[in-house]
Picture 1 (cartoon, rainbow, N blue to C red):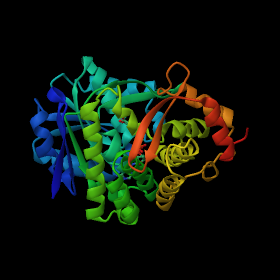
Picture 2 (picture 1 turned 180 degrees about the vertical axis):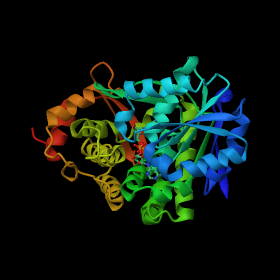
Picture 3 (picture 1 turned 30 degrees about the horizontal axis):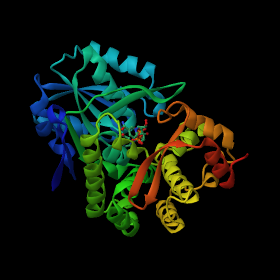
Picture 4 (picture 1 turned 135 degrees about the horizontal axis):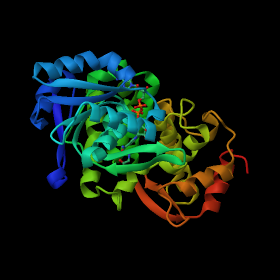
Length: 370
Ligand code: NAD
Ligand code: GLY
């Protein structure tokens, strides 16, 4: 059984299909978007080794030739060098405007291949076949594509919507538990930012989702995609409401910056800790009840994600350095800090003009060095 979630963006509208075993139908589902019977498949070595044969067979069964462009796994591939390499290989394959790129992997591959598609010959179409939980519920939907630079993450990029997203739950069977938890952080984010009922469902079903129980996983993924699709359709270019999707990200990015964007702290783990910090900061500012902040923190911790600075490798952090990273965040405007804060479980809002001193004092109270 599969379900389809529309992303209502007018002439850029597309479907996100969620289901178990969709990979085997990929050829039939992707073929309508092809002018010539071929697609460049950008994937990383790990995903390609585990699932490449299955995807190739599914494409071939529908008369589609897969032209693999395999890149090393890991965030360091989302760089100018990685982008140049992918573009060069697409050129070597003589890919044309009528051809499409298939991004087959996690958020790294999706962001990199999507950006390459956005600029290759001034833009060609692409489809997303996300293979991590994080990519299925977040990065493959919404058209944000980017690479990192030494000055920060995702600083060079483009909005480029895919033509189709295929979220096959069966590929998650090979995903390490730690990556499942990292993806789960983005799922709980949707509950916390805008759907209290979903948050309460997750409080009761986190273990089933993380154990990949089919019904629970399908519901969690589909509901997350529905919420993201609805927000993106309303605010594609993040002029307003889409910023809510950054709940936990300002604190999270600061922690990622300090820990080096690597294995020490995965993006989803940083978001987990960041959301707990955002709820406790909101409580300290009298915006949300202490009880709701405790409940948010407990639900995040119950899934095995970090919720305190002490939980994060690299602690103790320096409060001033963390705040300095926040100042450079893309969400900072004119030197003032912008945060996504909460009024209740399921009710987040964009807070501009947050006092950096108050954030610093809060971080010290949370155990950071003054
Ligand atoms: P990732 O792409 O690095 O994948 C994590 C690891 O899992 C990699 O080692 C990968 O090889 C492996 N993997 C992928 N699928 C697998 C599978 N099915 N089985 C076994 N191993 C598998 O990381 P991610 O967490 O998917 O994505 C993180 C990236 O996404 C970051 O660069 C972040 O900036 C970006 N992101 C983008 C958006 C957006 O809106 N564009 C949103 C959130 C995050
Ligand atoms: N991950 C945040 C966004 O897509 O806007």
